[in-house]
Length: 288
Image (tube, rainbow, N blue to C red; front, side, top):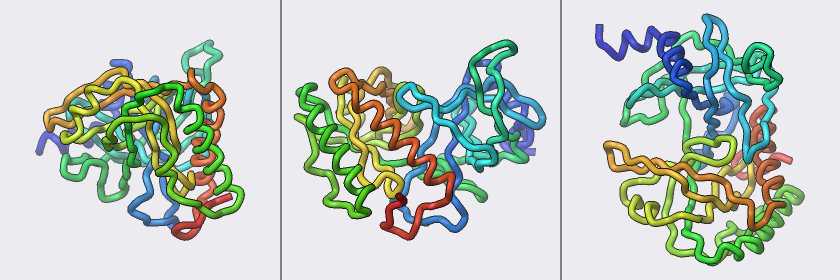
């Protein structure tokens, strides 16, 4: 029997290995079956620690954004990814409740149903298998030249997004809402953690990303958030893979405009609520 097949059938052993090493899994809210099939729509993924594995349940950290927990309703269908070495597997799961992270702990974690099966992801089909597909959101990144200039840019980005939510009309593409920045490079949003995000930068842009410390990002979460979400971040660590792609850990930076934290969290919560209700309408329509 091929090695990858036998590993796939030993999903519990693989998940236990991740938990024993203090590692995590990633998950995204599953798209409604009758939802949009827009190729431009991205799936926001959370990275959470895996704390306990049984035959029926998984216990993970509560997902969070900018340090604030994001609560998911019970019974919510999810698509999850586990990684061991260079290998990735996708499986379907659902939220089934909450529980203390450890016996006697006041901190609360999220309980997920254990997978019925897992499917191996091959490099050419990065996050796509027969039963699920995840499309990583696009992120535009600029080196930030003048940190204080983000205040006006973030305020303008907030006002334009809120206006689109109120009116249902998107005015422009927010391309003109920029602080003082250098040349742009592109990335994909791998995951959201407690205080930042993980980015994947293609090999053509690794040099530019490697020279960047403080940046301005536009995260594309349409149609759930009607315009790209502008966020300031610090690039804190990098890792180059065998394909010369750069994995970047970016920490949110709200020191220049502390009020922007609440707005960013609210938009991510709206994203989750919209998917949870299955209320994303026809292509181009904004859910209220």
